[in-house]
Length: 166
Image (cartoon, rainbow, N blue to C red):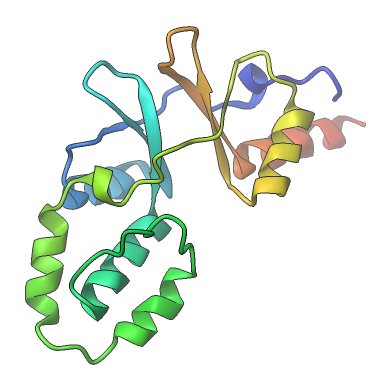
């Protein structure tokens, strides 16, 4: 198992979204692909961030609660469920949700991403995921474009296969 690299476990056919795609469009991509998070790319196809269901839920909670995103939106990574509960009971929720769905992904994405090369050892990916408490690492080619994505599910699946062979 020591010689397993990102290329051996990554999902190769990765769905990406552009930074200007609406939240509604991104949610449609999540419904279609059944992934919980997607890399965000710029107009040239270079990876610039990551958007997850939790980012969207946190954004919605803030907007329902106060109507504005705080300047430190990304630093306040509290659980979205807690924020939604705190926002419950606010007026004009339907209008806020409709407006929220039209906003671009770039307002809610994590503007940095953990990435690696296809040659990165799987052990390094595991260490990064545990230390940073993340669920996915984007695999980038030499031009900064998405070549794949390694999720915790990909790693568990592969390690399960390896253990089953022993």
